[in-house]
Amino acid sequence: MVTKPSYFQSRYLAHKYWGRRPWYVVRGLIEENTCEGDVVLDSFCGSGTTVIEALATRRRAVGVDLNPMAVFITRVTATPADPAALTDAFERLRAVAQAPIDRLYERDPEGIVPEHWYPDVVLPHSSFGAARKGVTVAHLFSRRNLAATAFLWHAINTLECDPVSRDLLRYTFTAALAQFTKMIRTKKEGTGWYVNAYRIPRSHRENNVWHSYENKLRAVLRMKRESNELLGHVEITQAPPTTPGATCCLRCGSATDLSFLPDNSIDYVFIDPPWAIKYFDLSVLWCAWMGFPLNFDEEIFPHEANFREDMARALKELARVLRPGRRATVNFATRHTDQINDLREAIEHSGLEWTGTQTLQQDQLSFVQRQTDLALKANYLLTLEKWRAPAGAAALPVTADCVAAMIGALLARRGPLSYDEIFQHLYPEIARRPLECDIRRVLERNFRLVEERRPYVEPRWAAD
Image (cartoon, rainbow, N blue to C red; front, side, top):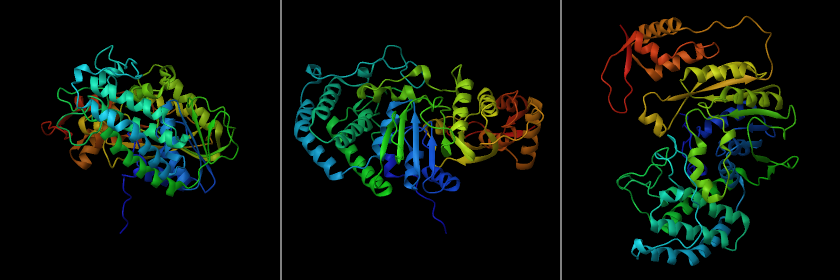
């Protein structure tokens, strides 16, 4: 009996990030499409799953992301570090920070005023940002915890230690940062950031900043021991400039500009562009403390006007740097008709040929997937190759009547199905043709629900 790898690994548990794909799926694709020593690229690298798994399988890795926080998390995860040096730095930090922070929790919070710098950046007003305009990073903290957090951040940045240990102390700070805020519900088990937005619940906890930081440090030590053993010595360069032959190259920049990479220099690409999560909005808390700028004007997001053009430019860059005959895998996860069409058209103009589609089931559903019946419960891996077949006749569009007929035949064959199950069956058939309708509306107009909607259970659809 083959045991399925554990989804939970210390290297991906230490710091929260959204939308991570199962590491063993990414590793399997890398091993299937490359050999040791080959170069793997992820131009939407996020917190670095592709980069780390490429390095773990003795490939070279190139990671690109417009979000500086994503590049920081990836770099710290991959950089070799001495756990003993980190422990020593932490103990010296404890000596200067724990007692003053603990004393704050013995005082009346009304009399506490922060004595050190803290960011007062305005949070984005959006479904992934703050619910009201004008909310700042500082508003997320109680008066006492803002003072404690500012003191801890000052202590970290003035502590005498080696650069790698300081980066790990900063990494620990950002990993624990949400636990310092008022976003932690009183009744929630654990200390995690519950929703994908900056929301302060009616009843929240005031965690002791030092205790939360110390608890997170333990997870960071586990992460670093695991990554040291898994990756060994990794030489990391941050472009520009690049170090020829470096094991790992990281760059903070747009996927639409890979000019630092030569033509035909990459052996395999895996990318997971944003489809439902506004990563920049959710990174403002971290970046404000780290002093990282976020270039919102260049962010690629499906609901932005330039999404189709941006994706086309990003895919053209992949086609340029990919070696002839090599593959790129694109993770796709949306049901919106315009985004389905946007991606299809971007691929058609990229110089890459679409050669396959497979379903990727999620072992761990996200908050959005658990709470919303319209959210995909599975993603799709699109296989693209660097050659183009002779042009043929234009693909016929998929109309509402076509979709209704396909759904009707599917339900007659399988019986009642959820929206997610229906979409999973339809997408491989419609993905490469222009879609002229919204699938959800076709369902509502032509089919019926067979049971009342219940919380966290997707309703099923049946033919009349």
